Image (cartoon, rainbow, N blue to C red):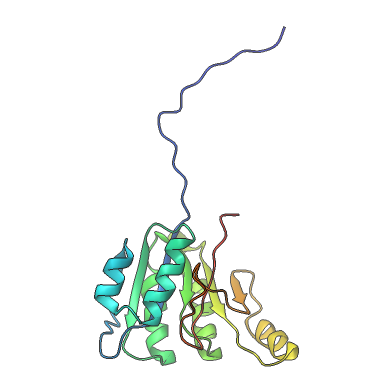
Length: 178
């Protein structure tokens, strides 16, 4: 009685998808048009500066199980710089999650545009950004402004395992292994 079967797993691998991040690097160290493939925190600290917001966010992504981060360090935090960076990350087929290092509404809108404009090969992307509203109605307004199933609004922002936070106004996201 019963059904018997046998199988051998030759390779099994699980990891979160690659994440892309755009954020401000240490002053004067931004390469707005270069996508860096970051696979270690040491590389991020050396390249972007240990205290840079982008490095702190990369650390949180690594702690959350992301094995490779595609990073675009920005020389400034303007919406135009973020828009260009999001376009670079959206064009990368391996990036499935794009994290914004800004909480400005114009940057959130640019992230939404990049996510929704990704071509068919790179269409299944999720955008993550922080909202720093003062009131509940402010959070509702921010959510209504984005109103997209492929955008994740994070608030209040999470901290890394040691309780450290990136600078005020920077997204501190904790991805779940769900």
